[in-house]
Image: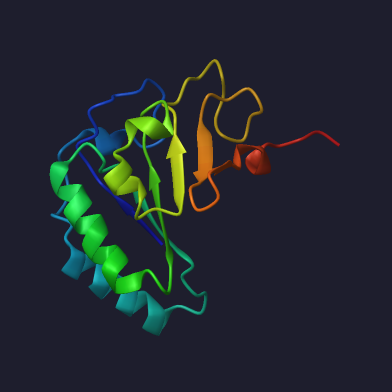
Length: 141
C-alpha cells in the first residue's frame, strides 16, 4: 500500500511522478491512513506487508504522521519511504528509526532507474543496514 505526499521541493528532471511536485490533493493524516488501511484489509484479498510513502520527508509534520502510523502498525507492517535526497544520512535519524525501507537518490536519466545497475538510487533495508538495490536490477540472461 502506498501514499503519495505532494509538495516535493526537488523537481528532478524526468521524475516518474511529477504531480508530486505540486501542492495538490488532500491533507494526509494518521486517521486517513488508518481508515484506508482498514478499508483495504476488508476489501482486498492481498494482505498489506508494507506501507510506503512517496515523499514527505521535506515536511516537518511528516515525522508526526510517520510516528503515529508506526505506533499503530509496527507489529503488522513495515514502513517505507521513497525520497530524492542523495544519501540515507540526509534523512533525519529520528525519521529513519520508524522505517524498515528507505529509497534515496534523485532520478538521473543518464544513470537509469533503480532497475539499472548504473543507477545512483539506492534502496536500504534499514533493519539490517543493508543496501538491497541489486535485487531490483534487471539482468540479461
